[in-house]
Length: 231
Image (cartoon, rainbow, N blue to C red; front, side, top):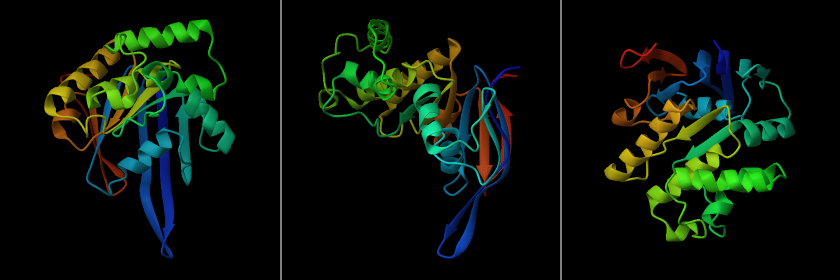
């Protein structure tokens, strides 16, 4: 079995006010390619820390993190930046779009970071805009879009480099119930097409849309459960 990501005995410690805070305590987690994983837990359980480590935004204090077959646990800042740009698609609660750019330009942002934007890249960006239902709004700017439309742009942007996985941080947190359903349906369809999705959420109904729920408590894995007969 091929893994999009594998975490082995990972700990993360922070120094705060002269004390050591153990945010993660020996977490091990394998995420097969094509999985749809929801990470859940109370505030302070370690969700954000695990998210940052999977997204190569931080390094573990101990343990190993593999993306595909590459150990990213001890990479330099520049190497981590390259990994983030080329192998991970990010979808945030607050969308994180650039207001001055159009829909198409926002989708293409990861390509700029890699200093590449060929005609085939531009064509792929347009195809992704079509896929998320925004092919007729390529020249619109974020302020001209609804929250749901902005999140669709963020999802298209997360796919432009064909990443190992999409890392979705509370992707429906700012959306109403109807738009939440639309975004979750889109994520579900992407997963059915084979894309690996790792989603952090505090909403039980949203978590139930995944194939698997991992619950954290006090920096440790409390439970790891497949849903709806998934294996």
